[in-house]
Picture 1: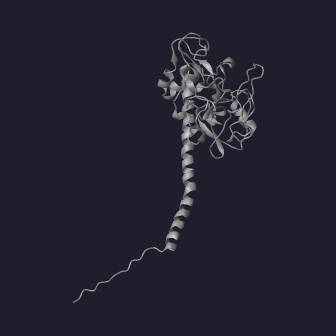
Picture 2: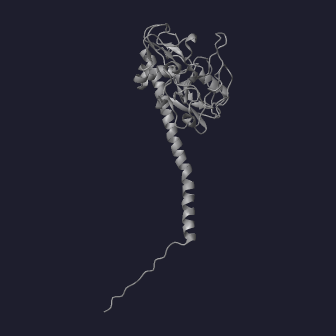
Picture 3: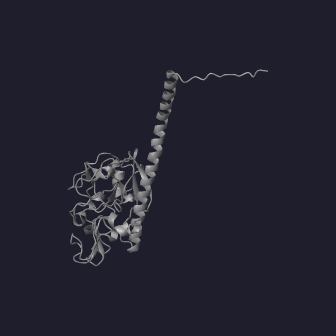
Length: 301
């Protein structure tokens, strides 16, 4: 008996069918892309939040090691007078040993004192680039992954030490304004005082203050002891514009800046981190910078 064979005729896609499939795939990708971007931004924001927390906890540990005395925005530390093994520099430099960066901190040791002369001829730790010929060190904790300016080359020198976070100089004053004591200096409450905030790492091809530079500060205290409440901040804390704020010397390009959607992230004196909404009032922001101004934060905080 003859075997019956059934032949099935196969045919390929028509051009129209192929175009329809491609169109459907493109639509699905278009629908998924915003979701992917949101997930990526959420991850970046979480990493940025963790960076701020690490920096603040390192600061508090540093203060705890030195009887509650916190390093200043730029200061000799831990002693206010010239002495052996002091450091001289910004708070973000002085907290390096407390965030597992002891080796970098040690690399700035100068047996006969640093280039500023702030510590006399005593051995000290000073990170200034113009003495060391420029750092090529990038400390990951000091970079926010949402900050696109971290990839811009530094045109002023060979360092890549610009950072994505600013230090509140009202909470951590320059040494000639006196050192903050923790928690005594935070009379308004540690949870009501900003310590570090988001900012742009680079403005117009130049660093928007480096981890070895006291220019990483904002909310600047004026040089005059009778007029020390000038603030280089924007009326709205969230902005993508670098060169704005109240002019005061060369601090105009160092205001808080955020690249997160609708918020700017800040760390507080109790070690917590919070996202501050873009609609926060100017005075609520202002009062959150002062650790002992006696002002009550607004309901929008």
